Picture 1: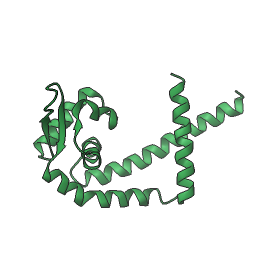
Picture 2: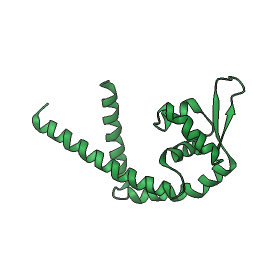
Picture 3: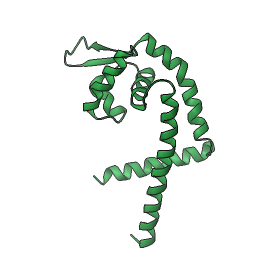
Length: 147
């Protein structure tokens, strides 16, 4: 690897980090305006789009440490947005299920959230978004292979 390539890699990392932080901060602000934090929103958004999920698997799907999962599930349960449901076939498995109140909330807020994301990413046209996604996936797959 050349010195120029190393310098470009560092610059790319800084740009990726700053871009992620800027977009994530704006998304978090949008989510907080609905009375949720980003982790809570991630959990109920997963349940909204994918249906009931084993609690043990939710953390991996929303990039949350398993130790924090119980805390988040408890908070969402207190807000009556989700409920725990034991698996009838395996007593060790507990599902998180979106309640009617949780579904109604997502029916109300998800369209505006999706619109906010579209506005944040409107700096790229559709082809540029596809290219960006392909390149980011390529970087991710390569980095994962290095482990």
